[in-house]
Image (tube, rainbow over all chains, first blue to last red):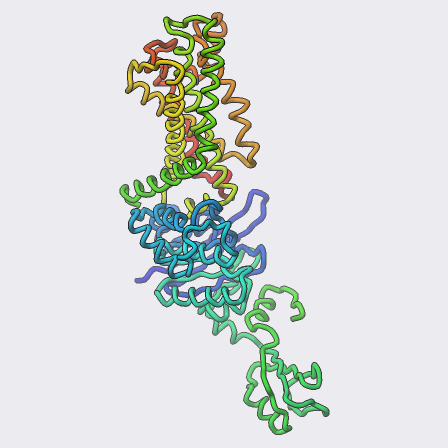
Amino acid sequence: MIEPALSIKSLSKTYRNDVVALDGVDLEVETGDFFALLGPNGAGKSTLIGIATSLVNKSAGQVRIMGHDIDTHFSQAKSKVGVVPQEFNFNKFQPVLEILTDQAGYFGMGRRAARDAAEQCLHQLNLWKRRKQTPQELSGGMNRRLMIARALVHDPELLILDEPTAGVDIEIRRSIWDLMRRINEDKKTIILTTHYLEEAERLCRNIGIIDHGRIIVNTSMRKLLEKLKEESFILYLEGPVTAPLDLEDFSYKLLDAYTLEVVLSHGKTLHRLFDLLNRQAVTVLSIRNKANRLEELFLTLTGQSVEPS
Amino acid sequence: MSPSHQIIALRTLVAKEIRRFVRIWVQTILPSAITVALYFLIMGKFIGSRIGGVDGYSYIEFIAPGLIMLGIISNSYANSVSSFYSCKFQRHIEEMLVSSMPNYIIVLGFVLGGVARGLVVGVAVTLTAMFFTRLQVHSLTLVIVTATLTAALFSTAGLINGIFAKSFDDTSIIPTFVLMPLTYLGGIFFSIDMLPDFWQGVSQANPILYMVNGFRLGILGVSDIDLSVALAVMIGLLVVLFLLSLYLLTKGVGIRS
């Protein structure tokens, strides 16, 4: 039987100021999964990750990594997990290569093996040319990649990334996405927290949503998106619309003469919409979602107010 | 984590600590050598020549072991407190906390880092002392044992200070207001036989007295304190402080919420 990559039972955390960050969380992430852990600010995501990686003390409950309990078999459990924290936590004065070889050494890798692993990770993350520089000499995007390299240097089976693309430009974000996909294809389990819901939708197969210290959704991305009752699309037209359109029971509004917003409710198809537009000689140049689908669901599930996009 | 992997992890941490203080040797090693040279010049040459001998040795010979110990104590303490607090402040202590290293290896790594700096400074101060006086060694084993035990003891104390410290100011309060007075009153510059009975009794409550005298016995062959008592005090305190620092780290005091 394959053990889950992460198994959490009745996990609770109450901070000294009586703030309840986690309230009896149960969660299981299967080995090989690409799992998104989402939640509003203060929902308990970072606390959960902190407990799983020994950076936060739990109040109650059980956490197992690849079948190893973090309390009774902490060494085995920790050797299986790599973590990319939200904020930079390097020794600013230590050269990049040294950061990685030391990290490998902390996991018991001999000097030669540590050096080889560090070199491999630096090549993989495109940081080899920066190996003699210190983190304070690197850009924000390079430091993000360095954190991923450091988390990978001991070859963990489970990689936990806490908002790995926060504050990086689009090019670097895409390269980090590609990297995460490759890591996952390499049979490593990934748990990702992010505020970019598009990122979660593109990358992850399964999703957990945490709110007020409780898991409120734990399902596959596909099943979750099926719950979406309606979806809004923006259509850019070739010519101006001068008269009201007959789109049967599709609700729509004209944002301007060349831009149409259409709401597609459950059961209706884009094919049918285009058919109706075609009959009225309306040509569509391009189309996009008004908002990210997962974002709409997330806001509904967590009861947050929807901000204008 | 197997014992061999633990040794690798410990070696990695100690090597990192040594690289750290060697990289900034102008701040970590040189000042002690200069300070002690000034002590030898002023206390030994200028003032000492008027004081006369103590326990059959010239004053400069008598204070030499204590001044070497002063360098070892202050530097082993400073290394642990500054290194651990810096790790906390920059949050790269998390590199160790997320690894599979047991907590006792982390404690041992920081302690041995402090011991290494204390001993390096001890050697530097000894070499400086040799410009001013002839140093004989009565028992090399005792010199090494007392120097290492003292460095380990104060390195562990520094680590505990680093664990509790919440600001850079907190890292200098204990060295300034506790460690320095105890060190100066610990028999570096005088024999407790020179003190009135009451102050002799008070001095015996100062743990540094035992270390300075243990080390002086190793160098000169004279001491105010029985060697077995001195060693028992050092080993006892070291065990207590080591267990305390391990407990604090395991509980996550100052590092885990």
